[in-house]
Length: 104
Image 1 (cartoon, rainbow, N blue to C red):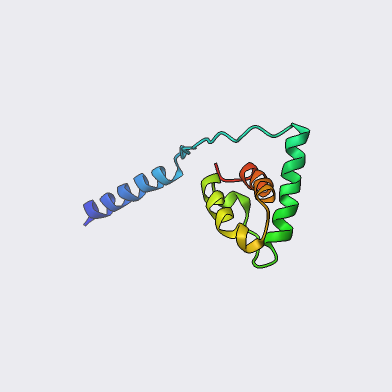
Image 2: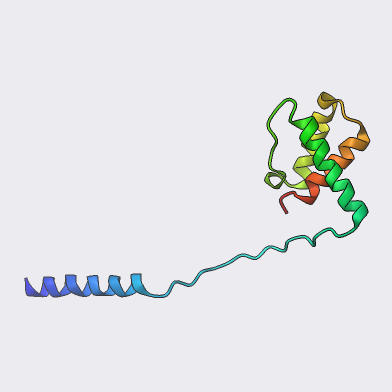
């Protein structure tokens, strides 16, 4: 009986030590895209955001641009542009905004 109690205490001691040990975190690093500094590109991205908010919000809520990658946004824009009655140039400008903020 004493042997079982000692064994149980030994197991508890080991578990206590393991649970208090220093945890080693593993991290995954992703490279964020370089920030856009070109004033012409920044103006297009800003205009794209405005077009996105004013056109896409008419029929449904706005999606976070970081929710999708560029390929997904292309599919969404190709499908939704005719419904929103936006020009190809407006679609390209909206894509500039979405792709700049898309999931990478």
